[in-house]
Length: 262
Image (cartoon, rainbow, N blue to C red; front, side, top):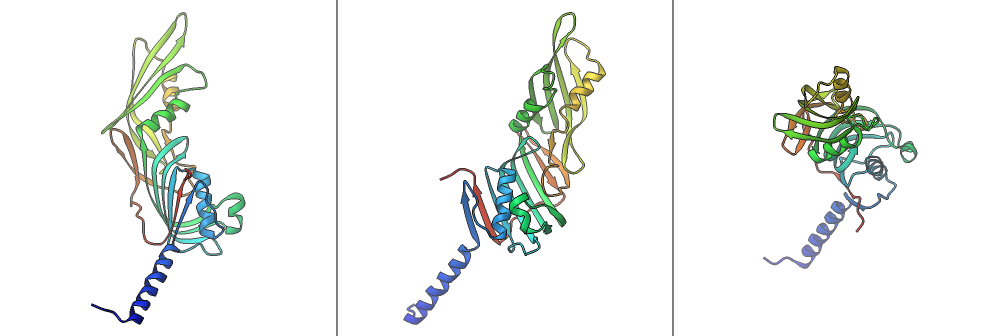
């Protein structure tokens, strides 16, 4: 079918302006987030505060002059919260009232009120292991070593060696089996655990100290959004934390960021 020249021209103009409008809804940043719109400043605050390896933010519209955002979706890879690397963290929030945008550049945004938030987090076994090796089981006394944690479908197995210096030096293998549970909607604790000791009895105070120093296993209290996690799904190589409703992306203004430079 042949089109009149004027019709072809009009059709091309429509396509051009449609494409420009679509392109205007997408922003890509590498290494650094630039820009001074409210959306860009909000996105930069998330990138600098959470330090993800990459992330995406979707807004249904730019934040208004009071800092209100009606609908927001965040998808972060490789961020760190509470000393644990989060492989992937998804957030969908509704009717968020941030603090005044005039303070975002200086102190970053905070949340005054919010209607609801949905969340899903994936933490890899290797990252949980690194976290407990770095900070758990009593690094303050230097007596723990060879720490590890093994995720299983229905629970978790942790082990570590504790050096006791009495008349002689004893290297005690301590094994813990339990399951993960949600505490306060933001923390993952080891619950219903049992403890096995190789070669020698360990006083109860030492047992409680050992368990206490690995709790919580995962802590999301530092996250800006007031999460309420409901379930823990354990796989052989990861832990999946979910709220009652799961987050979903939507069409809107898209901001994308990659920490590595081109």
